[in-house]
Image (cartoon, rainbow, N blue to C red; front, side, top):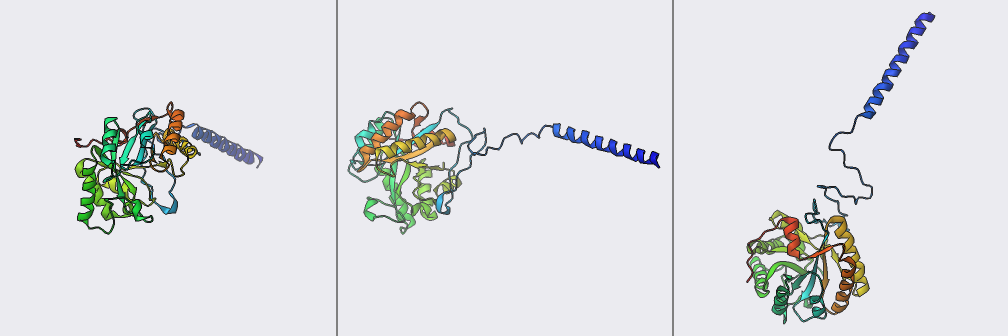
Length: 308
């Protein structure tokens, strides 16, 4: 009886030892390839080929922002667009005197529209048509002449877009002035983007509407889904603009590029002063580029556009 008990005890001990050895071997086996990218609890660590997630915009809107898989140039890039040229607005000369490359967005059919576009081109700056587009809210007089409205027919919308493009020399694309209603309207945006594609242009969504469909539709039509990330002068003080420029720097460094928008206008000189101070802080850490440079690098955009 004792002999049998000892035999069973030895057998159990051998089985336990075998289990311990097998467990040790399993732990020592390296993880499978393809599982090597560590989880980053902060969500900011970048890995080549990995797309960074974006926060969900407020009001349930869908983000159309596409982040790069890699930084081709090796530098964090900032494409700064200045809106509302064309009416001799305050801050115009100060903006043209900025020491970095930026993009000039000119409203059509205004007293200095053609002059400002030519001045920008002569300085080697990109030109966009800052196309007035119907907002969900806002005063009609803020739109300016030649505005695109959702109640217009397909033919009327096309005529408005083409007339605006013909009015602004050297334009390589369009961005929207106001336009929160139009950028949510599939029919009207389809016409605007079709004209862009026919002319070898691209559309920059100023992002006045978190529910904008412009980026999604641009992708579907084979156009680059370009959009604004940060408004510089949503508060009209030079101090706030400097603060926003630091946010631009953070965005550019964490996600390799940033598109940002400021304005000439009533507070244009204050905006220009804030931008100039911000440039002094950012110039050693980011590269300021024209919107066309960014679009070519980021989305491999090569159009058949021929400038006069």
